[in-house]
Length: 135
Image (cartoon, rainbow, N blue to C red; front, top):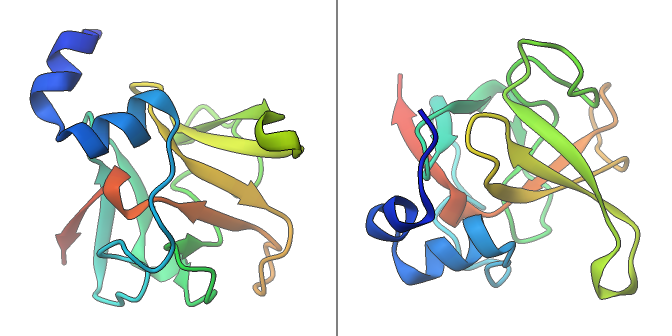
């Protein structure tokens, strides 16, 4: 069942709505999860879809939570099991790849090819887009 924009507005705070549905960005070093290391799973705040496992999180010092892979995807969202989808983003005069929740299409952040792990990926994700579920 598709979620209407009115329902998203009811579920989310105005700041969360701006980031998830209007493709905003939270200030670096301001979110709950940029410097967080508990064991568990991160899900989409808008729809509840599981997105990232804590095992894929790493400290990148960029000010946002960073992961080296999403559930079902490293740098390829063509896998039918992938929790995320990618879209070219040329806003702000930059060429980037946007990461969105596959289930509801909400904006999560961006993916870069400068990660320190063997995947080479750095998913740079807004904390406001995530809920955490401790193992």
